[in-house]
Length: 325
Ligand SMILES: [Zn+2]
Image (cartoon, rainbow, N blue to C red; front, side):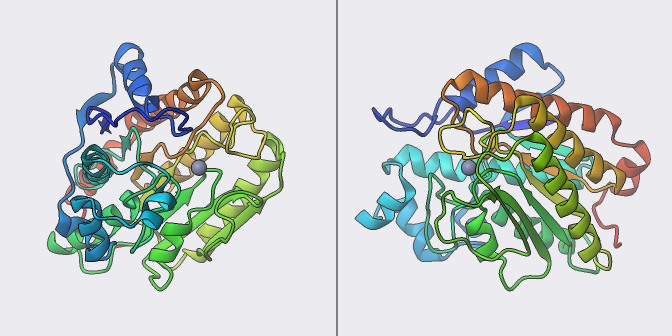
């Protein structure tokens, strides 16, 4: 299975910042040492044309040229630098590359070791998110599938299990039935004002493993029901580590075992329906970096197992990504 990264573009250190810029490097190092089945590759830079599939040209230009207003910088929560602009483009490129591997190379699963920048809207960044990698990649895969001869629009499913609501993604696809957005998140957490996605499940503070997993099962059942007549041909899974009980920015109380079971159920549901998936790690702000990295690492282990068991028949039949179903 391929894992794409963007941490080789180093962000300038900012004292006191809660954003764990070193998380991705630690995850990549853990994968390199302990999970040799994951092929680690740098993400390519997304082009401005690709970004424009989900973003206003004015926003792209402001980020690339570094002409963001003070308010726009504050809302991102990270200081602008040329490296931030480049790394954000690289993270979008990583999700695009993972989507091509999963869908068109018929690998069934591929990973962005970061990504899941779900607070980024079409016209602005927010909450450590500059560009919405999943939104750009979803639109690009739809265009590329069409170019490869697919006759119907590629239906996409976004399963966003980061503890924060995927408000940017919901907003970008508000009037677009071809991308179904599901978000399970803490009710009383950032963003204060939620955007309406296709299916939003708001969980109470302190939600534990059992309650969460029941809610997940119900949400997935509801999503499959509503998608019965337009089954997804590609899924994006935002496997945020921030529902964990020791997270500084979450309000839920899942344990590592519950998060592993969460991932297992998502992968199983997708495998059962032969839906290729792109995994983005999304958020994770543990009091100890190691706690967060360990959760992301377990997601990688399950992604690797998913890739190993992806049926050869699916690999063959999906090879050109043009299956119409
Ligand atoms: Zn989050």
